[in-house]
Image 1 (spheres, rainbow, N blue to C red):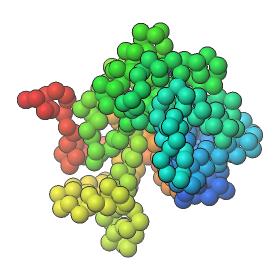
Image 2 (image 1 turned 30 degrees about the vertical axis):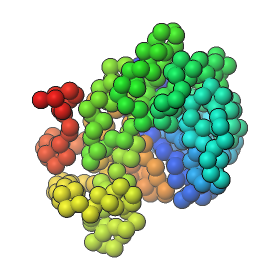
Image 3 (image 1 turned 120 degrees about the horizontal axis):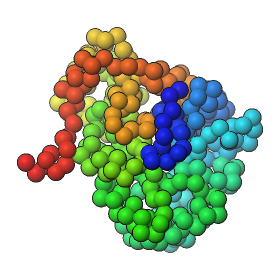
Image 4 (image 1 turned 135 degrees about the vertical axis):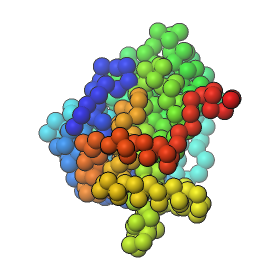
Length: 331
């Protein structure tokens, strides 16, 4: 496993990030533990989760599964950089009670304590905002985070799903307070969805944030979905935005061109999509969310894949980026 610094910090993390969103809803505890053991044995030391994972009536279940794995000992907790998130309400019955969601100082305090209990640990390495909170001032948010750092309950603060100007606003506020500020940003970024290149990735690089792409296969769209469709497995491979996207003939043609050019090089589509992200400036590593050990092993192969320059050129032609801001929309 190749390692890199997380943004401007001294923290070293693997270039493949283990996403755990499937642990609980789709992968039971035993298999989840097996996946984490396999990841750790392969050198993956960066695990990502969120307090709401488990979903519905089982929110928090994913953190509990990770916590039970940590409790097995063997140095598991010490070897892992654990990242979790705060924002969403944990009430499965409906609308959250006031102050049980978002980024108020009160909810941050309650949420971190609950995550620590579920994870069975005394600290969280990277505590991330799951979304921007337009109601809470950054001064309040950073005050709460600074207290948690001083208490040793969290070490670093990251974000997810922020706009470029949110990153600037957050870190300028942190700078005025003498705080370290955001050190990472999780964003939707892959070959088929490159809008983050316009402002989010440049803002993150300017402020020294590591960029951690989520949905690197765009919900299965970049994982050989058309080939699997022909073989009778496509319905499970594409879901959500990806299934809807395939109804668009232009996007379907793009995906077919992608699969054809990857096949020409004798490579696997999903592994190419991950390897492409690892070539992008400012990228720490993509989050992979395996349901099985086999899916994890495929992602690990991508970390060792060196894409030919000819293929990189072809990929840019099939999936052109949006261009730099403001030129992309101003001229």
